Each structure stands twice: as structure tokens, then as C-alpha cells.
Length: 107
Image 1 (cartoon, rainbow, N blue to C red):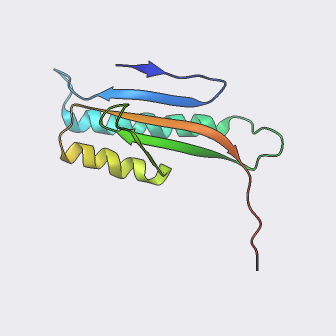
Image 2: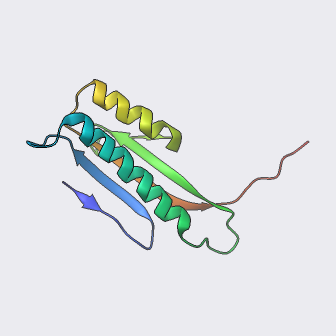
């Protein structure tokens, strides 16, 4: 299992292996979703840099790190479900926290 978390930059880059002799496949999928949610909660608890309003997340998802494409944070669960339907044995998720500022609405 490849795993890299840089605590200062709030990154998660991980290839999840879903083949395990004792743990059933649906349980592995649920643990992936829980781990991503836990990472997001941790990042959102960190103090924001001056001038930032919220934490924004740049995400990538793919069968491998090379084939990962950008996606919105809300699509991660859907993509994990899609990987479950295709019965993939591994997939790659990248979540990078970046400070964001709200844009004023223009009338």
C-alpha cells in the first residue's frame, strides 16, 4: 500500500489495495470512503492562512496514478462506487487542500 501524507501541505496521495484474504471487498470499499472523509475532516480543522475563507480541495481519481484525472470532491464517492462495480483490485486517490477565498456575487 503506497501512502504519503505531508502534514504541512495537507495532501493525501494514496493507492488503495482492495484485495485482502480476510477482509471482504465491500468492507474494504467502506474503509476507503471513511479514510477519505477522515482526511477531509482533519484538513478542515486546521487553521486557515491569513486572507483565506475556506479549504478547497483539488482531487484526482484513477485506476493508477498515471491514469488519474481531476474530479470534484463531491464525485469521489461516486467514483469509488464505480470502481466497486468494476471490481477493481486497486485505485488511486489524490486530495490536496488549498486555501480558498469566496468570490463576491456580481449583480
